[in-house]
Amino acid sequence: MPIDGPRGPNSLPVIASCFGCVSREDGLFCQLPDPALSTLNSLRQTSIFPKGVLLFVEGQPTRGLHIMCSGEAKLYVNSAEGQSLTLRVVEHGEVLGLSSLIADVPSPASAETLCASQVSFIPRLEFLQFMRSSPDVAMRVAKHLSTELNKAWQQTRMVALAPDTHAKLTSFLLEWAEKHGQSTPDGLRITLYMTHEEIARNIGTSRESVSRILSDWKHRGVIRVTGGTLTIIKPLELQATNALLIPR
Image: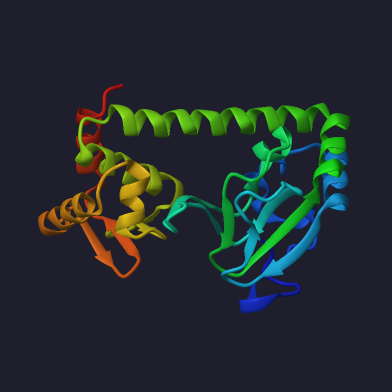
């Protein structure tokens, strides 16, 4: 994103136009032909939110599509007992609510900003009209929904077929590191927005098991944990273990 120009809360650079966004390489619609991108740019209603703002709530009608122009948000669900499970972190360039928008069903999850973020919104009917008018947009939507389905199958496969909790946690951390990790001289550094309890619910095990395995890895020097940051010091060791434990 541009360094110069207007800024919002926490000095967040404001992306005034899709054409001026340096994150265009990553976003779902960023590589559209210029005419379609121009239409998208005219449709989006952009707001800047601080950390902790709910973009939408689980169970409410899907009013439209949210695009993370900058910042991050977490998608999570709540149980009837009040327990919360973080599904994933949505980063800049990604969209929220596409599958429920297309299916015209209530949102299956809630979304909350994790930091100061610029979010664009396109009302549902306007987006559907936009998609119908452009084969390029329709193809990108189909590809995105197929990718989401594949990720859901991979998650189900990991939970169902991993032989034990060690394999499930290994697979979870490696996937999280692939999406959100940062290479450093010390190893792969990732920020976890989940507690041990949330991680346990995500992979279908107990909090005690997650805490015990992470403690063992710290003792062996495989990982280092500082606050909410986890560094995989020996990523190759984890990758090798994962390849042996999870059937392909």
